[in-house]
Picture (cartoon, rainbow, N blue to C red):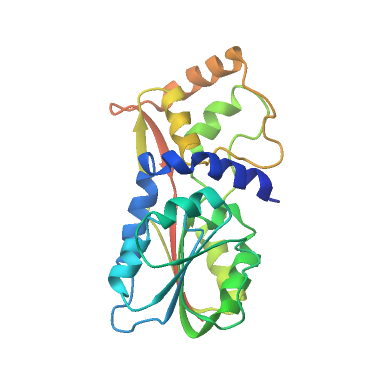
Length: 256
């Protein structure tokens, strides 16, 4: 899929001020990635690629207090939130597909739930280019069953695209090897959130800026009739805790 970077930047700029109030999945993924940090060796330069509001910085600074930390994000408003963390860090507005760094300058490339907004071969090529030999890649992204309940329900309302397409763990592993990484390890860990109704569920997605779906998406508001059809269709998924929404998390580790 071709991602419209201007649209993505706009969505995350708009979400920045309230992002942390709804970023439970991001916090969970941060903790999973943090548990995989290698404490036996200290990287000199660490990149948080697609840093969002900088929630990972506490993990990275705690594990490597002497490392130089760099945070890159497409959305300047996210970087402004990152700078409020009070951690000594260099922030840069930039595209993960074209990092503004020389080759072999990083020791750890960390990215939590940003890769799904990028062309994966380009992102992985840039990670490989900027990591020193022996450097590590730690990445979390989303797999194809992400939002499958929502996709099914909204398909009953109209013919528009309603969610992004996501790569499989197998495809991600293959692309990582092709980019020049070794010791590639991929794990999955789906998380299901629950919501009182469809409107609340969709607001939770919008609050974290994840409402951009690429080509084929709706250009205007959904009609009331279409929304009510989606509400009816989603009810078949209802559980005692509410309407479920799956995040098909994929965790990747590799060595340059």
